[in-house]
Amino acid sequence: MNLIDEVVTEECARVGRENVFLVGVGMGFAVAATYVMQMEDGMGGLLGACGWLPFHEELKRVGVYGEVVGLSGGCFGGKRRDDKGGEDQEEEDDDEDEGDVFASGYSTPTLCEEHDNQATTSSLMLKRIKAFFEHILLRGTPPTHPRICNRIDSSTPVVLVHGADDQEVSFTYAKEAQETLRHFGFDATLRVVEGETHEVSRGLMGELMDGLMGRGMGNGDVRGAVGEMLLGGWL
Image 1 (tube, helix red, strand yellow):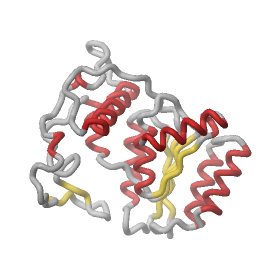
Image 2 (cartoon, rainbow, N blue to C red):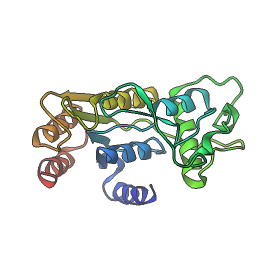
Image 3 (cartoon, rainbow, N blue to C red):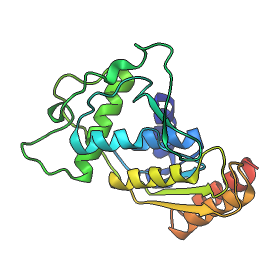
């Protein structure tokens, strides 16, 4: 995250925040989305292909209720979804103590409850997510003390594309990512493309570029540079 932040900060100073885009494929989108959900200022956009957002249900629980209770095993829990978006299946854990940092749980006042009886807005929920990510990434344990919310921003537009025939990461994961990002105030769109798989193809990148153009993101020079990267640099 520090490396991404250094690059984004440098590029924002050079060309302006509205002209800086993050692009992620597969797990790269998950990393980029995690970063964008912690940003204090918006940027040009977040583009993703064949991506997903890990632990989307847990993140919504943190955002809505400010708490995670009784989650243990693995990173957020001992269950996983199969690659086709099927039913949850139990996952064996060789080390019962590994990843149990979430088991103790924590309550709303430790995650950005700025005022008594504050309404649960998308802004407040995103502030809780930011506090959650920062504490976990830095310390590896849930926060156990009151925190002061930093400023956050959900103005970064998000464009997602996914192959309808992707057998490695089902397009249902992309739908879940879109739903979660919208839940926290982001304007996220998704195109599920028939005939496309998990391969980064010209057709899939063309759909991503079309989504960027259709929403008027960036100026002409920026769109040209992004298009060159999507349709030339990766293919």
